[in-house]
Amino acid sequence: MRNKYMRHTHVSEAKFRQLLKCFAADLDGKQSSSLTGLNRNTVNRIFVLVRGRIARMNARESPFLNGEVEIDESYFGARRVKGKRGRGAGGKTIVFGMKKRGNRVHTQVVNNCCRTTLMPIITRLVKKHATVYSDEHKTYDGLVHYGYKRHYRIKHSDNVFANGKAHVNGIESFWGVAKTRLAKKRGIKAGTFHGHIKETEWRFNHRHENIYLLLLEEFRNSPL
Image (cartoon, rainbow, N blue to C red; front, side):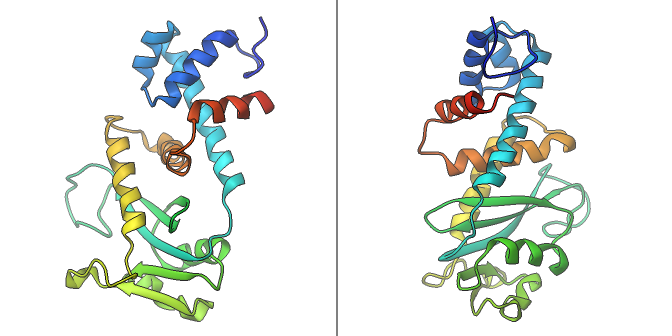
């Protein structure tokens, strides 16, 4: 029978729906293959396609951020890497994140945390009248010059993590969720990391909704 959720596939519609429930439940490829009876390679291939669609859904949904916005960057990779620790540590994937308080988060994999890399992302997505919170990283020194008149910084180097409303606890909470979730994958290849972090972002933004029904509606309207 024709699968209305996925084009050019031999996977039946019933099996696809079953597999999508496994994906929504955040089961890995091995678990999903065992539950559905589908070949492991077929499961992994479909999961890659689903993550690719989710990345595009994120791009569609990304609004201009206003109100109170927290910005920060985080490093993903092995816990112990020889050489420098923290910013500049080797072998790590850098992810820049922005979170509107009480609302959604936006992530972007970046090559570095230089001003020329991060400022275009900030100015594209964060409204100039927003109140921006960051740590003391020198990259953010020029925010006022870029038109952000309300910029508050938290000096983590002085063991200060909150000063009234000035904190980045929201985006740091997301980093904790993301790292815990991705650690369960037991190693993610560099070529697939973008799909996994965007999936994590989308799951976080829709954490109070039914993930399965959201994806089912997406693929019904626009099949894979």
